[in-house]
Image 1 (cartoon, rainbow, N blue to C red):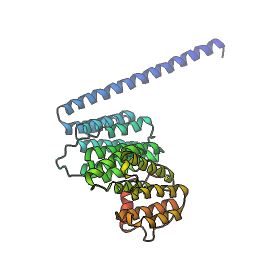
Image 2 (cartoon, rainbow, N blue to C red; image 1 turned 60 degrees about the vertical axis):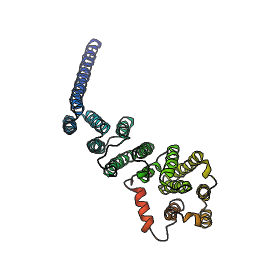
Image 3 (cartoon, rainbow, N blue to C red; image 1 turned 90 degrees about the vertical axis):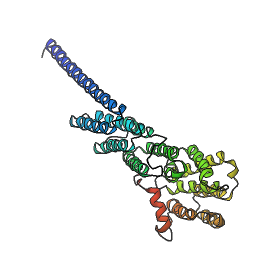
Image 4 (cartoon, rainbow, N blue to C red; image 1 turned 60 degrees about the horizontal axis):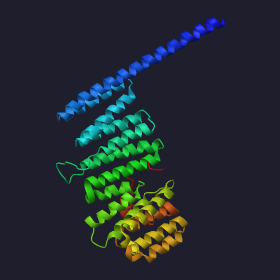
Length: 340
C-alpha cells in the first residue's frame, strides 16, 4: 500500500472512531437527561406528599434502566429514591429501595469502590436523627434497617473493603445512638465495637451510663464495652480488635477520669496487657483475682470465655450454649462475613 493510501485509510478510520465516540457521548447525555427528567417528575410527587406513587415510579424507572442495560443509571435512581424517602421519614419505602440497591450490587458483582460505597454512605447519612414513629417503643424500623446494613456489610467484606465496612458500622452506630438513645444502646454497641471511632463510643458510653445506669456504675459500662469489642474478634482481625478495645478504654478514661482507679477499669488495663503479651496464665490469674468484681455482671465471664477462645484457642468448658451462646449470637448477628 502506498504511503498516501495508508494516510487516507488512517484518516478515514480516525474519523469513524470519532463519529462513534461522539454518538456514544450523545447517547449517554440523552440517557442522563432522561433520568433527570424522570427524577424531577418523581420529586414533584414527593413534594405533593404522594410517597407511595413516588415509590412505584422509582421502581419503574429502575427496571426500565436495567432493561436498557443502563446499570449505573439504575443504581443512581435507587440511591436517589432511598435518600429522598428516608429524608422524608418514609423508612419502609427508603429501606426497600436501599435493599434493591445492595441486591443489585451483589447480583452484578459490583466492586466496593469509592463510587458505589459512596451510594451506601449517602443512604446511611440520609437516616433521620429524629424519628416520627406511630409507636415510639417500636423496633421494627430499626430491625429492618439493621438487616439492610448487614447486607451492605456482607457485600463490602466480600469485595475486600474491610476498612469501609468498619466505617459503615460506626456510621450506623452513631445513628442508632442519636435516634434511639439509651433505649437501643445495646444495638448501637454491637456496631460501635466493630467500628474505629473510639472517641464516639466513649462519649456515648458516658452519656448512657448516666441516663440508664445508677451512679457509680460507669465502670460496668466501660468493662462491658471493652470485653464486647474483644469478643467480636476472630483469628484474622484479633489484633485490630485488641487495638480498638485499648483505644476505647483510653477514650473512656479521658471522658470520665474519675473511673481510672476503679477495680474493673484496672482489670481491663491488665487484661489488655495480658493479651498483648500473649500470656494466658496472666489472664487466668486476673480472672481469679478480680472474680468478686467480675460477678457484678454475669455476661463478663461469658465474654472472657470467648476472649480466651479467640486469643488463646481455649474452648470454654461448657461449650457455646446458655448465656455464652446467646451473647455470641448477638455479637455476630448478621455479620458472618466479618472475617477481615
